[in-house]
Length: 225
Image 1 (cartoon, rainbow, N blue to C red):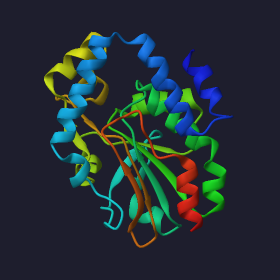
Image 2: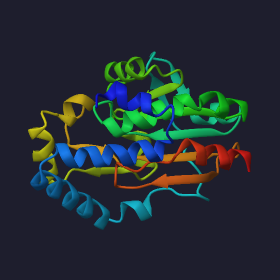
Image 3: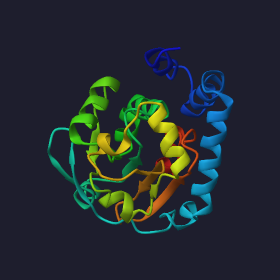
């Protein structure tokens, strides 16, 4: 199944269902020995305690100013003056699970806006690469480039690749530092936050397993409550 076909499926599936189906398909595509390396690397990242130390529900979100795919500066505190903000940290446009997430949120964007919320997606990729992601997925919300990992660090999400995982990605032909305009093999673990107008996080999802994301339906439920 192509990426376009997979994204189209999200019109009739929840994001959670779409991701689960994608995981099943990946088992058929990725050799068992490679999957084992990836799973072991996930375990190593989890052992660093990053899921526990990252910001969570009840914490105050740090302010940030980053440029969007149009080169415009976007400041969290300014957006919060208009209403609650949903912030998504994703790995990059090269990640199929990230694309599924971004597309699913686009499908629920009008509902989020009707509840007074705005949506921001953050990636460590360079602005040129984030613009490509916007165009590919037909996104109409801001995608911000967190070059240097300023926001990712502030939220406690940045990790460094274990060496075996780095070699797997190199085998896939993916040079993460080049895509990010960085000099190190770093990424944020996927995360999503719902932040109220006081800057307090009222819902979070932080998980090293990049195949699991916060479903937009759960975000909508949180905003309604």
